[in-house]
Image (cartoon, rainbow, N blue to C red):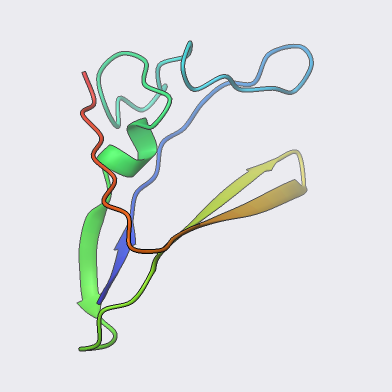
Length: 84
């Protein structure tokens, strides 16, 4: 099992919201808009365990001194993402 990471920079709207399906990243982490674009640009890092296990993705967002975190846990599911 590997630790995967990816990042992108977005500009929030007047309500402080970012809609990944309709906004392209400012830093061009991927081209165009894609709801699952951040999953598609992840890169494998160091191996942390030889045992297979669930895929766990943690999303972290921060702005103006505030932050939010959400975790996606995939049990035995293969997720394919094509960022266009």
